Amino acid sequence: MAKGPSGIHWRSLFGEWWLELVMEHTERIIKEPKTRDQLSGRFFHGWINTVSMYRFDRWDDNDKFFTSYLGHPTQGAVNAAIFWQNDDHVRFSDQDFHSAAYRNALLQAFAFATFDAVQFKLGPLSEASIGHVGYPARWWDRDCKALHIPCVPRTGMNDLVMNEVGGLAMTIGFHWLDKHLQKRIEGRVHSRALIDTTRILTNPPQSWANIVRFRAPWFRDNRP
Image (cartoon, rainbow, N blue to C red; front, side, top):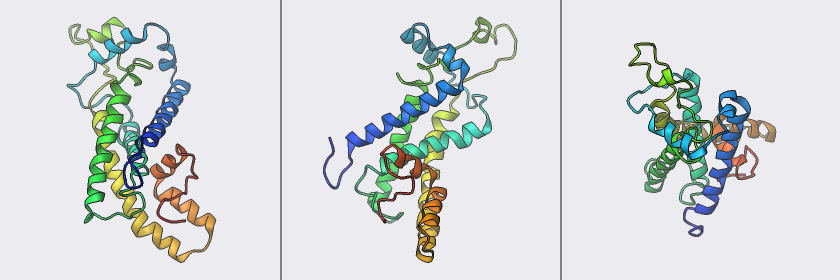
């Protein structure tokens, strides 16, 4: 239940996060044949086995650079934006590092993005449970070191870290663009279409977060 007019609206926060999670997994199932292949079988057995074999001793999971260092930070930034738009302490304000509320919201958004990252990789509704990402496809994938053959890891720590670290950096950067570039554009132009388009371009994570609360992508809480 929401705290009130000056708190964090937990019910809508987790409702929007849930919708974002469903959309992410739907995209995975549509795009990834390996994920679809693993949907049958014992859910809990496959999930527990996948998590138990996760490579916490590695950084790189052999994903594409774009996926690891842009896609996952963007996922973190979207979840930070979902948190932001449900926190009345900051959602009507501009970036202000002198504000304790802004600094606290950054830490809370970081924690929320961390929760999402761990859940998305390892939780009960994760890549590990839905599609068993990281589970060896063949017995020799598991025993490759003992057999002295090349290992092709599918898991690592990078996504567990880059979601929130990269996501927070993106959040701060997009807040800066909104305050110092976007608001200047809006003060100089009168075209509603141009204003709406530049709002989307200068803060894509917020625009996507708007969609899961059924708002227009260009909507901003602190101005019309």
